[in-house]
Image (tube, rainbow, N blue to C red):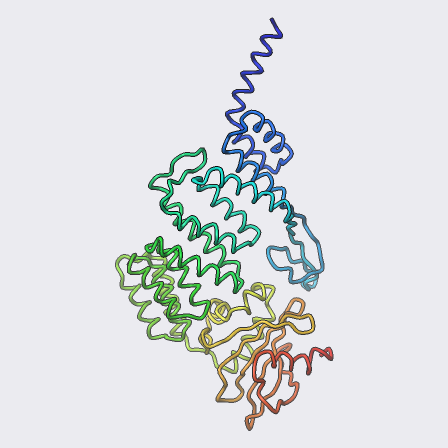
Length: 442
């Protein structure tokens, strides 16, 4: 009797547990207990091999096994990403402590193959498709992300299902619209020019399906401006304001774009329109008032900008931010950091062309300015990360239209000699720095 009773209880316990495999498995994944998750998965498969939720479970286990991390202590003073910068007693930067990710591409491919099998077996499961896009994004496979999301956008007639094969009904459109914005933003935030192109193409496809997605219109405006098309940027944001006239963020962004272009008249009008609106939120009004104040601040002298302001930012690079963020775009130094310090750049960000070069194993960021009419003004400024600082080199117009290669160090100007021609492009300027300075260890 005891044996029969034991068997009966065991069967009841197994049946109860079988109904909760999903939560138990997901809990093990969240806690990093991958071996426990693997054991649960085997029991689950034995209990109900036809359960649709087994596809995302197998996918989740493989995907988590494709990633691991460790902490690295190194002498790298510019590690990039999230890191703890280490200094000695004198304040000199001596190294860093950073988390490093290890990714196993072969296991990742197994994970993606598993979710593909799930999509083939249950093509109406929207969570399978968006989960695949999220996983591809974690490995920066942006073309795959775009392909998956585009497939969802074009498959508008499908009766989408979610976890547990529940019908989404009318809520499916809002989920797809929000997801499209999220993935366009994620691709764009990768910061690569190729990623920007992929994000822009996907964004336009999403807007064709959801033309009233204000957040996406605002984002597309930002991307257009970054790619150099200020007209398209304003057009996207104006469409957003037409749809949502009281959206203070979009209206402020339009004012800010005018400011970046150097059109202070249009920027001031946009700021004052925000101030006079009876429906824009108070936070946006504060931003607009701050921008108006920045616009009305007299610009610094070009001499101070070239030979004091830019070198001062370079000297504090580790305190302010990573070189790519600071020098990869003029906006950060010319606008945000300048405003925080109560000064204004004499140049609009749109007037400055930025390029990145490598010479002698070093990365150099070059800002190209309009050809100067006055002396001493600069055609090029190069920023070269060097330990815990950034060295600034200039090609400046000097007396009698001569050009001089110089740099700023410890508050003083260093002259590396005249140049009998103006370097025709940024790359030529970098090669001149290498020839005159870096190759001989100055």
